[in-house]
Image (cartoon, rainbow, N blue to C red; front, side, top):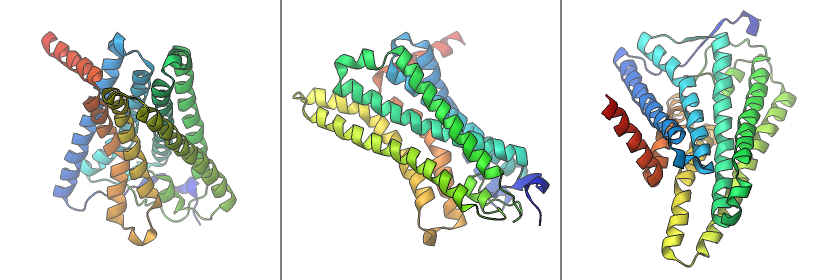
Length: 310
């Protein structure tokens, strides 16, 4: 019986069988990753350079853009390399690092989306206390807490996964290192350890989800009490991008992990994993930019300024 110490590399799932399809997947991933890099890069630059955007909402948006960049840079480059060069291997250390950073950035994104929900709540329901409740120090502490909690959770997640002995080969049924696929290679099931990690995960995810639902219930109640139709529209429009991003994040992740086993198939699992790990980082900047005139104006100023310099 071999164990994890004898495994020097893993074999990732091939995205396609033929050379033409592999090249097509490479081009598709390249296009999505370039869109994500451009969109998130523009948001980070616009918020960092635009002094009028130095507000809590845009500060958290900058942090969200950083998580999106980190998330897509963790999984996509290796998948593109494997598609272009017709390889499947990833080193044991590389797999552990990929799992750690993927969980870290996904966890950070969930925490930041929860904090951004609180930002909208204070802005709409307690506008007079906005400067007090969301001062620069409070925002920095909340962002630091989001990153630190995601780091600790990811460390626990990765250490728990790679401490198990592996003896069922080294082939993973996913295009990146994902915990459920690694656990399938484990020699034995440590149910107590699994239950502990599942409990922590459920508490974190369910806690954030409940907080977002309850907070938006209060936001909608406050918006409906606004007498002016224009005021209601303006208040609600500031929440739409956040609601869209949360819905995209929750729906794709939930369906990927909670779908019934009866409808599971390798092709469907691959499509869903791309949907929740690759597509959101590319779409999030577009969702936030479409509804926010200040951000659009800043991005446009940044782009035209760069073109004029050249």
